[in-house]
Length: 117
Length: 113
Image 1: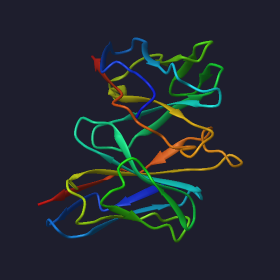
Image 2: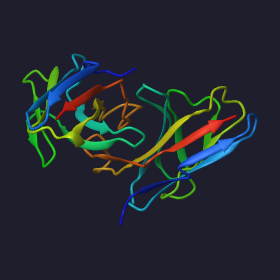
Image 3: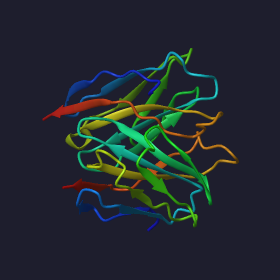
Image 4: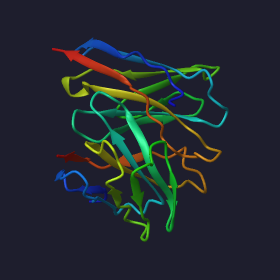
């Protein structure tokens, strides 16, 4: 089945360690996104990529890094520079309609819950 | 920042219709109105989207005001599985943030049996 997969579902790391969250999609979507969600809050955009080998900062990119070497993969690294990394991380993807994204639906993964101790 | 305003919470009875309002007074002519919902500890799920005309699908209906400054998501018969946080989002068709989904806090819908 086509979809978007995030792994692992739960992740524990010690403070000061970098950690990479995986996001893979087999929907042939051009655009991919990373969001962070804190308890009781909405999603905040970290990074996004509309084509391979290109990505842009979202609203809260500090302390995070991404790569987009393949169309189907968009890993997120939470670095030691991120001051409050404990959160629920969500990946999404969306296809283009021509060159536009707004008239298409986005698909979300089931999330990775990162806890830093 | 989110460009939409929604009530923090709403309650409904099971098997009754639910109307979830959303205000977006600064909407531009090419912004699409999207709705997603999120169950606890899950990723958001697409519900419906539209531009100007009312839209229907198997999950819900979307009623868009003539001036497009507000819209209403309609669940025709609420079930317990519809209890979730519903997000109303404007998805831009132009500009540097073209296509990005900017989430607000959404409306938490509770459904009573």
